Amino acid sequence: MAIATSADSRDPYGILGLGYDTLESWADDGQRTPYKNLLDQMVEQQLIDEPIFSLWLDDLGASHGVILFGGVDNTRYTGELVTLPVVPPESGIYNVYAVEWTYLGFQTSNGETALTADTFSVSAVLDSGTDLTWVPTALMEEIVRILPLTTSGTSSTGVISYTVPCSAKSDEGSFSFGFPGGLKVAVPIAEMVLPWDGDTCLWGMSAISSGFVLGDTFLRSAYVVYDQGNNEIGLAQSAVV
Image (cartoon, rainbow, N blue to C red; front, side):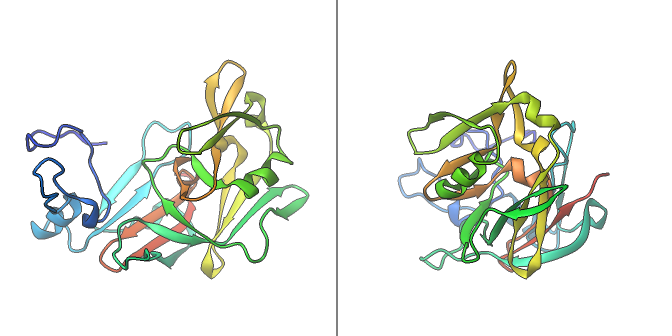
C-alpha cells in the first residue's frame, strides 16, 4: 500500500504497480504509450542501485508486512534463499513474475503425502495482488479428498472457489510447495482458512484450468525477492519475526 501525494490526471485507478514495465502504458492516449514504472524511476533517480524489491507479508493475523526496495533483508527468511528463473512467455518478452512450480504435498505428524505426480510442473505467477492461490483443477480434487471443502461458486473467468468449516483453522498440518533446486515452502492449514460468514470460512485455494497464481495465501509463508534486472525470483521460507 502507498499514499500518493500527486499523480498524472490521466490515471484514475490508484494502483501502485511493481510489475514489469512491459505492462505499463497510457490506455487513454490512443497509442498505449509505455512509461517507466515506480521501480524504474527509483533506479533512474539513484534511490536504489538495482530494480529489485523484496516482499515479506507475515502471517494472516499480522497487522503489517515489509516491502524493501533495492535489497534483501536476511532476517526475514530461514534456510537458503533459492534463486529461480522467471519463466519467459512465448513472446519472449518478460511481463509477469512466473516461476516453475513442481510439487505440492500435505504434511502431518504422520509424514508427508505427495498430492502431485512426479511429472507435475506448471508455471505459476507470484502475485501479491491476488488474495487466493489458484491451482490446477485436478490438484484441487486431490485436496478435496483430504479436507472437508465445499464448492461455493464459479466465477465468470472459470475460477472455482471453496469454503471450509472455520474449525479447520485449528487443524494441524501444512501444505508443502516445491520448486526447482529442492526448495519447499511450508504453508500451515491455518493460513488457508479465511474469515467469511459465521462458522463457514473461505478456503485459500481456488481451482482453475490455466493461469495458475501463488497469491497471498501462499506468499504469507514465503519471502520473495523480485529481481527485474536479472529476470529472477529469490524464494525462501518466511521467518517468524
